[in-house]
Amino acid sequence: MLHIYDTLTQTKKQFKPIDAGKIRMYVCGITIYDYSHIGHARTFVAFDVITRYLRFSEYDLTYVRNITDIDDKIIARANENGEDFKQLTARFEKIMHEDFAALGMAEPDIEPKATDSIAEIIEIIEQLIESNFAYQGEDGDVYYHVPEFADYGKLSKQNLEALQAGERVGVATDKKNSMDFVLWKKAKPGEPTWDSPWGEGRPGWHIECSAMTKKCLGKHFDIHGGGSDLQFPHHENEIAQSEAANGCTFANTWIHTGMVQVDKVKMSKSLNNFFTIRDVLKEFRAETVRYFMLSSHYRSQLSYGEENLISADAALERLYLSLRDIDFQQPLPQVDRDNPFVEKFGIAMDDDFNTPEAVAVLFEVAKAINKAESTDSARANAAILVELGGVLGILQQAPSEFLTAAVGDETQDDALIEQLILERKQAREDKNWARADEIRDQFNDMGIVLEDKEGKTLWRRN
RNA sequence: AGGGCUAUGGCAGAGUGGCAAUGCGAUGGAUUGCAAAUCCAUUUCUUACCGGUUCGACUCCGGUUAGCCCUUCCA
Image 1 (tube, rainbow, N blue to C red):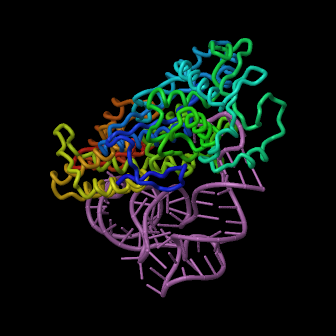
Image 2 (spheres, rainbow, N blue to C red):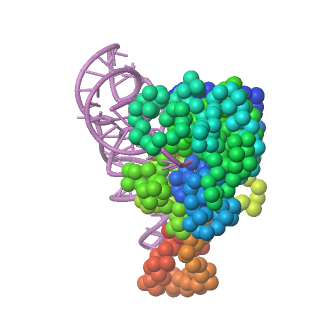
Image 3 (tube, rainbow, N blue to C red):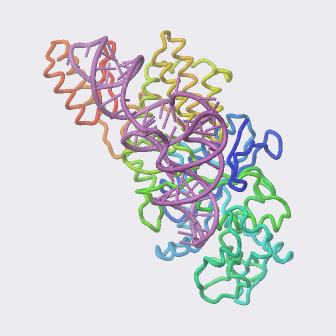
């Protein structure tokens, strides 16, 4: 029985889809004007694993992850670069897809963009104005009137008075209430604009997601997710917009991921303490980065640091080493869902996608492979390890490939490696241990570990 | 200031009202020419602090302290 922690009710609820066997899930993607960093990776790897597990659990899932391709920062960056904002977003969209793919993320089923949803955005704003949840200010911007929505603050556990009390003394605006937020921004010179009933302009930040959820999944769907920093105001405002416009519950379950931290502080652009996915992949295997993210629960904060990555790499290597002697040329046996390892894995994942516990099961399987007394037994467990690894999006490479591939900028001279191994073999046959060890030291300097096994010498990167 | 989350061994990180997973690391043994890998064993936490409930709490409740996140753009 799948249980998911729901931010709205702050409880782990037994999950029940709206339509039996089907799940509709929407995850807030990124605002696209720069390289994605490890914080983004954390959130979307988490949802990738959720996606894989829901499908493994035989749900018919529709996974939507949007791209926000119009907003203040995009316009500012495009102006800085002296390019059209579309050029900027197209470039980084491509980079995002490359980086996400490198981390083993499957593509969402639908990846809608704000700029492709202007008609739907306008439609919702019109509905909100008709029902008095929104109004156009004197200066031309259209606002959502927050006090009109009685449930405002239910997701983030805030109340209007407290929010207003805590706010900064701002500049004078034409808002009716200081908490009112923009649905449609009147055009300013030099900015991209679209035509609307309220004049030329562009959408505000939150309205696109109300439009895209409805467009892709309908008024009421199962799961809405995103980083925990989106809880307020973004998701709170989405609820206000959608529930006011649609007159029904928006999302049944809210999933929020914990933030990645560097030196106990949130990784963010403004603090300039972020590591881009690209840069990290120059030093670590992509799969190691992914494993690192699975090694803690998706809701907890994740502390990014080199030591933790090194430790993750060693752990993942142990799993791959257990698969190294398996012959993958022959098809592995079918995995039985009643297998105790598979059941244990399922129990862990059913408990709010508890990946650390699920990973622990993988190590039990690896140990079973290492201890297996027959090839059949080893192969049966290897099949389980690869299958369950696949649900987490790891262990899908050929072990030898994972263990020997160069990382990032490393160069690989296979011919030299082979030649040195041959030379060492000869030295060992001559019982010239000094020379043999000298060669092994040379390998160590290259970051390569040798293993003499059953007359053969294997090597892997350390 | 208001709201939320968290506090576990050298490090990372789960579970559990009744011997505290798993991984990394360390130590010893088996194995090896020596290693590596593997297996076996050991290693460390009175589970932040104080009080309560209970036959029994790390686990439930209350308080304290500390950290982080949100209240401004943010995955």
